[in-house]
Length: 359
Image (cartoon, rainbow, N blue to C red; front, side):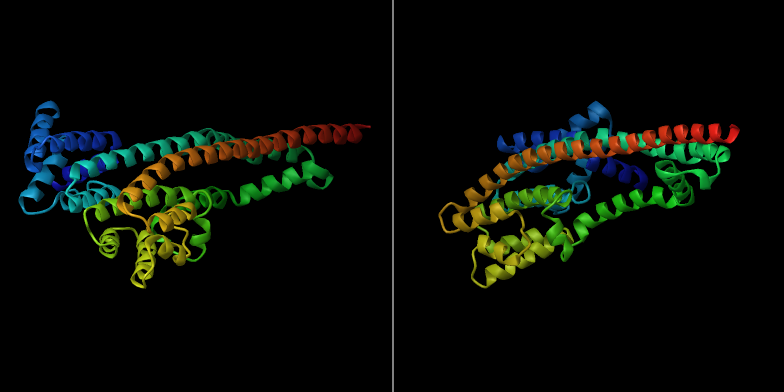
């Protein structure tokens, strides 16, 4: 297999949530029944090759993992580049705890939560996005077709009130169309790039609000479950945090480092997270951690809090997106109503001007 085919298979597998979920579920089932890791992967690979062929992305992924495992890598190292950092972090934590099957099941839970969050976001933005495209099309039609035709009939100085504002607005749109079209694209690109990279400053405040709060909720809950898996394996709290920093995004690393500094000064995880001032993973969760850190069974409490928070986060995001949906539809509706109202006003004013001209 050449490099291009390998990169294509890696891209398809990394972006194929359903495929990865089936792989993790099968692997978890085999491991929980006492099958060794390499034997389990070989079984899955062989069946996949028979079913889909050797160049199918899942078959390629399993083959590549087996090659790396046989060269001495751990599973979490073998899957590097084939999955996201969250999944890799969870599986690495499972290796540390000796419960890879449980970590794989936790991974599928996180994937389900991500799907629900993604579905909530898409369903909340799809219709408003479609409406905004319609509004943009209306804007282009008015600015390049309708209003210029009116302006050819009636001189600019004779327009008054809203119709005059419509003419000015159309002139502005025609002059700055490229910029108006580029700004949303650049803004969305900058936002996507900022999610894992923008670490502090204003980002700390923005993490409290949409859309940055969605990123914080999702990655915060994943971090908690991974942290719980390491602690339950007997790893010291400070060492567990250090391991979670490996491969983490710059945004996550800064928050873990701040927590680690607090713990090295003698604070428990909850108080250390509170002292950082980042509000990570969530103010309510920080309060819970401060309480449970003083009790026995802290690792179990961590996992429970993480799973409960995922469910709560999905519900919160679904509620947020309903609000976004309503506000977006209202704004677009008002814009279209304004454009239509302006057009009617121009027709009436043009009629009055023309009648006055022929008297």
